[in-house]
Image 1 (cartoon, one colour):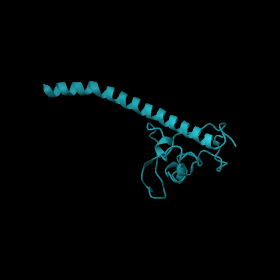
Image 2 (cartoon, one colour):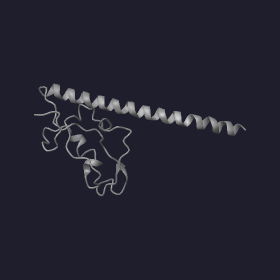
Image 3 (tube, rainbow, N blue to C red):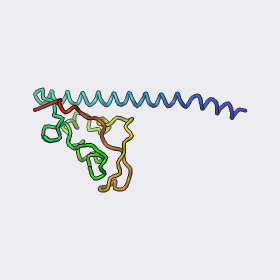
Image 4 (cartoon, rainbow, N blue to C red):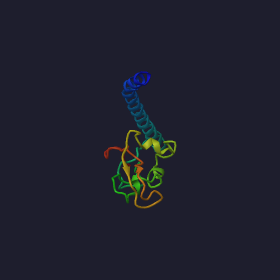
Length: 136
């Protein structure tokens, strides 16, 4: 009888715990957006009020280079050193790769080269920027 009661209570609590986890992930994602926005602002304060560009075709002015897709040969998908650490926002974001990714993003890639070859790894970034923002 005790086991049945515990089972019923657990079944009632699990949906509530799942909702709480989703809410926490949403708040963390909002916080990451806020941190990234502050990084853009601090960067522009140091760069004569210029925002970094969104274009990957002007790498010296872009907030980040590299394009995200699901190509396992594209290092931008899975290697933090490929683009994130080269971003002009990297020092302003506390040198943290987590700022560039929403924790609710479950997208993965299986790299064919590098130290993660053959493994399933999460993509390094889910944040993006409208192409019309920023400029030199």
